[in-house]
Image (cartoon, rainbow, N blue to C red; front, side, top):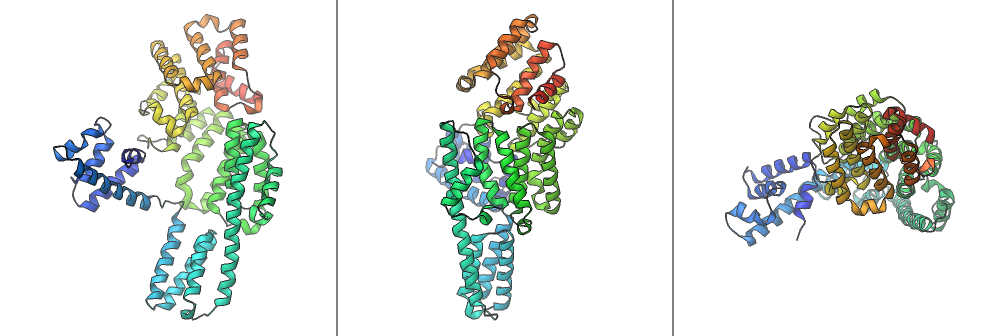
Length: 499
């Protein structure tokens, strides 16, 4: 059966509203059965087995299944149209030009037809869309006898050159897959990775030239693979030099300046994020500034990255000691009615909670958590287990400070029960919760030498460069209790020492 409910519930609030409007316009009836079914699916209190009776007043499974198919068809139509977002606008624009030019030429409007085809070629070249260029050059050749400019040999040369580039892109895809496989093998065998040597070996195997392998798109695709490995090993300090060296090399190439702008922007964000993870906050802000400058020239991408930039800039500012300034920044990323299915917004809300915690603004944290009403299982599926861990720990720490101890006990017990598998894998999290419980239930023990010694031995601190910044923040909370100091200041001192 088509997973209709999963598709619908994974739409953002804005997309759900747009789809409802879309259905109303198409049916021209506010009470159409498709719209009724859509609203029923959005209501978590109504079970799917009750849908037919709610719609038809009786069990009518045949009609209901036909209705499901029609709603799914409308959903596919809506998503395919809606998802030509800013990231893909240029592709849609070129395709429209190709279709229109072909229609005009086939209907003997040769001059405007070839003029539009020329415009499509220019736009496809700007974005280096080799598959679209292949389609354009084939149309030029197909209708060459109608082209008043009669440049057949020139077009054939361009088609052959473009085909070479298409083969190169195919080789790059094979290279990415091979790099990913090699990284997994090295990780399993605990072999230290030399990214440059690995790439040289793989590029040589697939006959990828230095020129074709050095552009913003290629580097971005490569670093996604490298990042996946770094997220497991936490070896961000090994990734940063590799990425920045390649980036610097590409940046100096004049012909790459205006190519792959969208990938260039994404690459800058990636580098900024790597430096943040590596606790180099000034360097992270440097690349965020470069990113903002590029977005000023390419405003169509601004909304895609606006929240991401604010979140990372707020984190950098917070860990550089500017807690008040960090609050001002993050509050620009969260609204009174946030889109609670947007991953960037959800990230912003948890970062805001962390910033508020460092300011002792516990009531503001409660306000944020009052809006986060989805289940932990949904958040785990959408945002990942670590995000859920951070979310729950910040809430628990806030309620400890508010002295809501009964609530804290129930939240910890609930978290432990729901996350048994995760806590088996992450022993440090389990140990942390154990000592956290002691810290508020037996506060007289916290500043004893025994508590401090056994705690730090139990959590087995990682090498300083591999310690996650969020985990450091939670460790700093308990350390502050041990020393009788402020949590925020202790956090800054601990992070600074790790640097």
